[in-house]
Image (cartoon, rainbow, N blue to C red; front, side, top):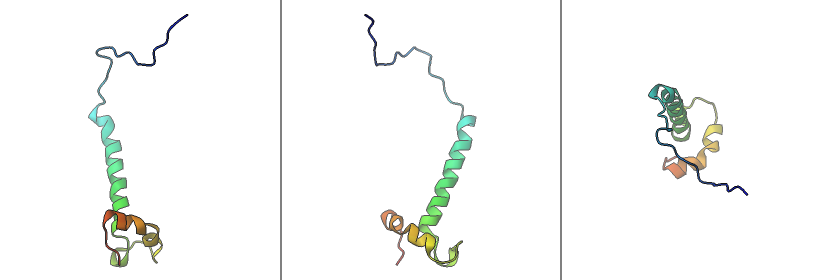
Amino acid sequence: MSTTSLTPKLNSGSVQAIPLGAIAPWAIFGLLLAIVGIYFVGAEQGATALFKGMYVHEFVHDARHLLGFPCH
């Protein structure tokens, strides 16, 4: 009968570092998504609105209050 271990065996030197050049595009993409998300939650209404009407405001209304943005 064989025994199976559920714990991984770590060999010294088997962990490879991820180069910064491989992470940078994904980090920039994530930062841009975060900036766009904060814009829509925090500033999409009134004079700075990109879309007509209150559709975006109503969609993110609860998130505005959760994050502390005043809206009324």
